[in-house]
Image (tube, rainbow, N blue to C red; front, side, top):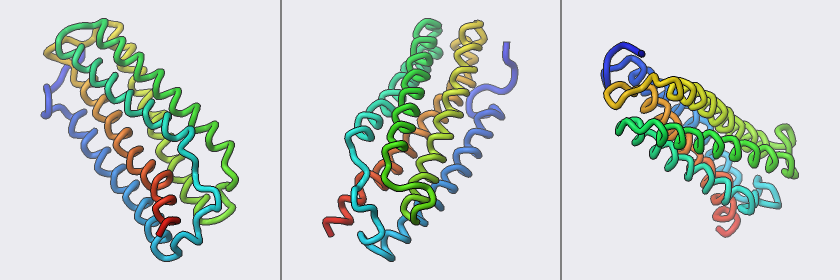
Length: 192
């Protein structure tokens, strides 16, 4: 059985808060750089074919759904419902893998590359950095799933579940900003 402080006093919780803060800063720097180029060069620096919402839209729904499933699984941990916890974590892992698979397929359809121009560099760097966070999140949830299956958590002591789901929600929120930046903003810039 895991030991240590409970709730917001646990070192894991404080560590996750620090991680989310530093990773948020890194995404903010990257997105600020993209915004600088967008303001400086306007619609001229965007690719002629803007990223399509055909795959990105449903993929966004998949990722947002995963936030619901991880929350539902976390509620299972709080209520002592091991089956609900495992089902929520399992569904979240599957949805995360689907998101990554669709994103990788979408990468292969891009008419630009990482080295073709500044836009391509920003697109692949930022979406790739986000995808790496999703992969890490899936790995974290897989470990928590294994520990949950082994019966390591109780309604009183389930901090790793809360910490892992917090990281997952962070990854989903970051995607909303990335999605708005690369999939919505180009259409707005082209219209202006």
